[in-house]
Image (cartoon, rainbow, N blue to C red):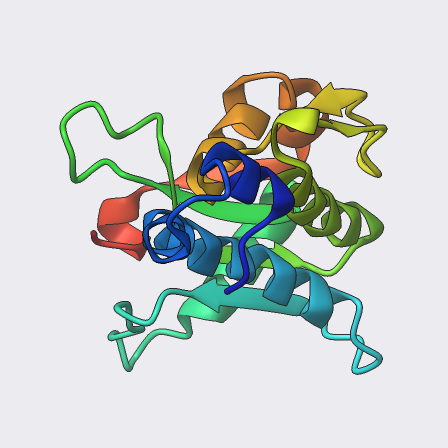
Length: 173
């Protein structure tokens, strides 16, 4: 993936290969947010969108796991289903970006447009997010951005619409 302007500035416009190597993994992960945004805005009008990392799999053939997650979202009146890293010590309060299941709503459409735009802006911070946040930075990786939405500056806007389930159950790291 291409580097953002702020990543080039941070690298001091030196050693292009090293700069790409330093930022490549994070930028690949940010592509997930761009992909989610594109599916949510698709003329296909999907009701739900799943982002599942390539190293994950749905393995219970007798369960309709995605239907179960959609039902949980409906029951809890939430729009974003995330999992934690409870397989790690002290990971139960930390979001893992390997499984993201979302209902297609105006909020989720704006959310993933906002997170990707915030990443592109870096330390210049995205102002006036579509989801209501006035000012927030997402210049690190996408999981830190989601965690900042969950427990940081974005909490009043994000937390009432999102939920976090056990990574041991839904997304074993």
